[in-house]
Structure formats: structure tokens, C-alpha cells
Length: 263
Image 1 (tube, one colour):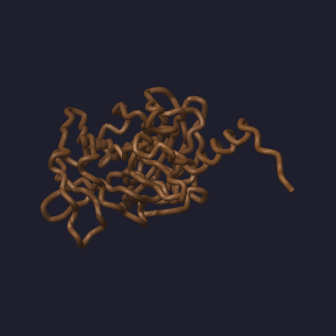
Image 2 (cartoon, helix red, strand yellow):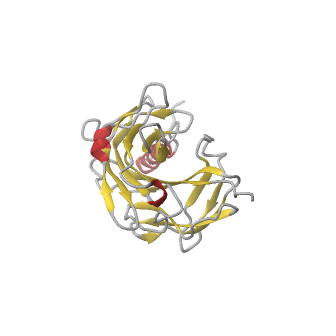
């Protein structure tokens, strides 16, 4: 028995839904985050990529900017980056050019264009080379880390997507208030994922809070130690619609909250 053909409008709608689903549900989101290490040679900034459980070495040519920001000056030190030693998790590392306790570090990473092929696999290219891709996106990653209590935590550095603390948490703080900005404006309803920087949970299981109409979220701090906040945002259509369907942004903010001292 023959079936009537599917109307063209319906088939286009189904194709659009499938494309959005392919973009919205990657196997695992790759984020960028910054940490501090203290080898014998002196403090180093680690540029981490991937996820805490599955770390990848960032591609240095894609790291557009790396800055050390103190209350007095801003220093660019992306040229000093080198791959981490083979006996530690993969990353790019560079000597910190300023005193850690006074430094906010910030980085921008261009992940480039990605397409999803008909078999579900991905390629790091655009629709220019794969016009029949089922989905396509452009991806950029931003990261900041406050390395000490005298760092300019509250500074807006100007990333397209940015997590900006509204306070410097005390050692006994049970939460931190932050504002999420997109292109300099509050991002209402943004989901802020939070946890210890070594945690690696499925995005559907990771704890998160939702920003209010002013882009402000109160993020719980569950225990002392390294903290990592993450926010993601997608825009469709892309600013380059001939090359991608949408633009994907992610931003992280890392800091450490030590145990309160006991006299």
C-alpha cells in the first residue's frame, strides 16, 4: 500500500529539528578552564581543555589570548605557553608573570567550525567544505581564574560570554553571587553549572542554578577547595550563516576557597 508523500514544509521542519538536536546534544562538551600549579621552577598557569575526566591538550594556535590581570596592569603571555610534561595531565603551561595572590588570568580559545555528518560523526570544518552536513556550528571558549584574594575578581574583562563575581567569598562562605554577561549585557535565565574543579558529571546530572532577570545567580559552595563555574550559550542563526547554523559559547570561572584558619 502506497503512502502519500510527506509535505515539503513538514519534511523541512523534521530536518531542522534533527539538525538542532545533533548540535544541542554533543557526546561531551569540551570546555576551557585555568588552574595554577606550583612546580619547583615557580608558579605556572595551566590552560586545560576537555573535561576533568578526559583532558585534551589545547591547540596553541587556537589560543587567541592569555592575560595576567592585576590591579595595576595587564600582561599578555600567550607566547610563553608550552605543552605540559608527559607525567602530568595534558595542558598548556606558562610561567605566571605576576604575583599569584594579586592575579586574575583570562583566556580566549577559538574552537572553530564543526559539522555533523550523516553518519553522526563530527569534523572540524564548515559547511563550505561539507555543504550536505546535517548540522554545523562555530564554537568559542572563554576562561577566567582568580588566583588569590587580592586579584581583581570583580573586573569585567570583555569576553563575549563572561561570569563576573559580584563579591569575593570569605573562607567560610557558603555561596558566591555572580552575574552572567553576554556581549556585555546580563544574560537572563543562564544556567550556571558548579562544582569542584576535579568533578566530571554528566551535564544532566551536574548541579546548576539559574540566573535571574538581571543575569545574577547565587551559586552554592559545597566545600572548601578548587571551584569551577561553567555557563554555555547558543545563538541561532550564526553570525556566519553560510558556514554554520549556530554559534556556541562557553565560559568558566575558577577559584580556590581554602579552609578557614583555626587559632
